[in-house]
Image 1 (spheres, rainbow, N blue to C red):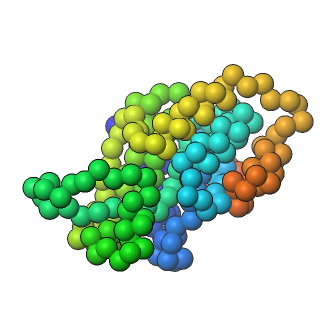
Image 2 (image 1 turned 60 degrees about the vertical axis):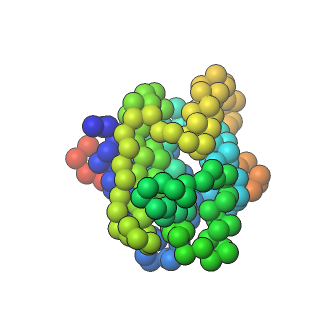
Length: 201
């Protein structure tokens, strides 16, 4: 079992709570260290995957203690016959367009992908089905996360390791740059915890 499983379970519960409270789930990036986490609200965009990767790569340059990068998004799923007779090749954005067109087989899912910065075997992905025929179900996958977003994330983190950051560039400056570029809406001060408990800083 991934050492991050319990942490991701807590993130999932937070995501479900926020979805019920707000009626939607804002795309969110968590940069988690062993004793703190930076919470970043991403700007809405049809190109979230590369934007998540750009922001995580920039922040990783200033937060080298990050050992887990977590993407939290609201996405779409689609119900198919169990015999697989209607499975089709989908392109990025197809399900969103189908949902907007009123396709009753398309449903909402919350997706959390946690990428370990050092060992992809520790990655954790979970999807939670909000509505549709399997509402309330969860699907967990441990081990190297697959798909467009985690692949871009790993590439960005790998590139960031070779970057030397100027002394005047800190996390706050990096966030301001990302906000100016329209990639980030807001960020919370790092949540800091001591051994055996949690406190907000």
